[in-house]
Length: 154
Ligand code: 4NP
Image 1 (cartoon, rainbow, N blue to C red):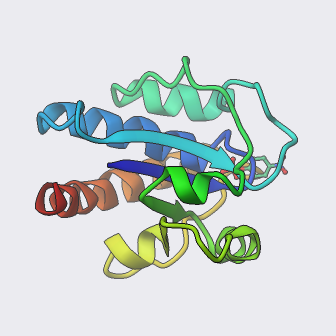
Image 2: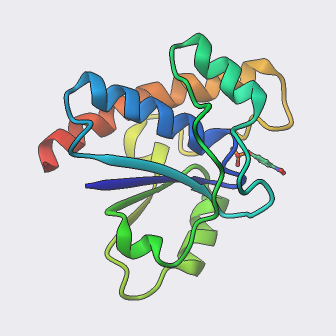
């Protein structure tokens, strides 16, 4: 089973989701059954580590994102991943435009599927530190629901 998180730059929201889900999968004993990655619809930050504010906020909660490097989503990803989760509606629109008609991946909006109240992950890039905390709060809660779903699917 392979899961790909997608945001715009792949330096804030989707790297956070990648790190948190990997951590939760390890705790659930599912790390060797589910592969996790993240990507951006844009290519501006390809090759870079997650944003320093993202890394700092994540590390304070026990998630080390320092090994991650930004990459851009590709059409091939729709055949190599089972589940592709977009952070906001704009990411979802861009992914739908890229999606090949034969792709096997299921494509969905991350929070619409795994949060009862919020549909879109707010972009913290141009805001203050509380934006990164909010992303972590939403990601941690949604990933708990995602892990339950993955357990049922494996
Ligand atoms: P992300 O946040 O999509 O969560 O990685 C952003 C990162 C970079 C930019 C915008 C959003 N940017 O404009 O460079």
